[in-house]
Figure (cartoon, rainbow, N blue to C red):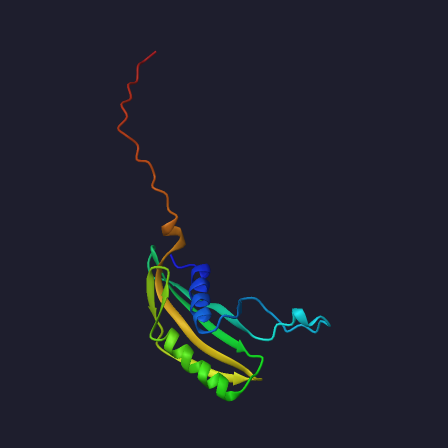
Length: 151
């Protein structure tokens, strides 16, 4: 079963290959602290959003996740973000390796919003259902002989 944790681990590994900076999955802001040691000036932020889970049958689900990877640079420029987009395409397309599976990424979208680069794509895959994976094998009763005697 592909968990969100496994997806995050795969995306983080690929992003670290592109640029070895912090990767966040929760909200993060540049700090207004007077201490400049705690200012975060360059990082990736990943929004990993479960979009749909459709039941295929009792054992499998079809899942879709939206992935929006934001790149906040300490020196933002369109040229930098266009170059970053090319690196992202080369790294994430045509597929992404998650655990022991290869998931095809059919298309991506790129945009720059308020001096932040965004690389957006969807992950679609079929997976074993949580209930099926965690189903216990039930013990089958052996043959039982019962003798009734009148008292």
